[in-house]
Length: 114
Image (tube, rainbow, N blue to C red; front, top):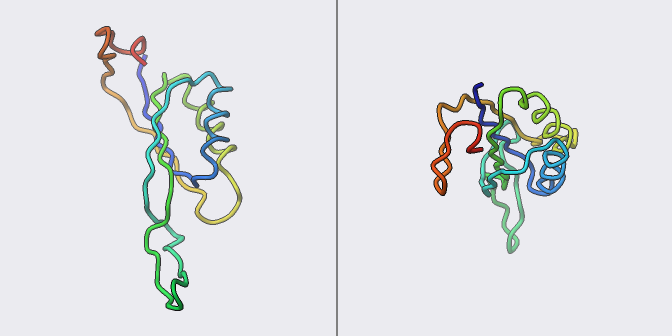
């Protein structure tokens, strides 16, 4: 069976909700990275010491999780539901194929290594 990498870029305050939703879906392992970026939101203007300046990159959180193909739809639904606020900047989810996974400690490979 093939594996997929799900990468979700979300609003930082939604991280715990997404983590809990994935755990309820049976997903136990994930990687989280603090990132910055922008999409249609295109940053925003802030006031600092009386001067306006443009913040080009907004703080986001990137969640990466590798799942078996049969767990993809459930995982996507869990992430989307938990991360959605209905406002601009809710983020994106990407799904890509994973060729191989190896657990460094044991040498296991494939799905048993996830």
